[in-house]
Image: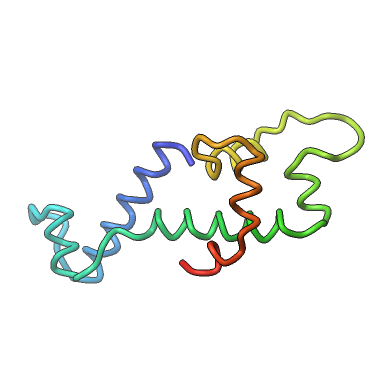
Length: 113
């Protein structure tokens, strides 16, 4: 996920809270004041992060075609790997692929959240 898309998601989340609380867009209300008024914390990006990790853990724990595609084990013409690498880069967070697979193989860690 790019910085621009994260910024847009944060803005959308705050816009949604303001609409649910019926706060006019012309009022000068900070994001923190809106969250305090709603008794909530910013959670949309955290929810996306958790779901990506759970989905990737589910895929990599099983021996199937989707795992082979993500790992790049397909026979035939090589592709540019942009989508696959974007997904893995988002989830890896400074780890190499082997460390990521070891971390994801612990299912109990990803069941909650």
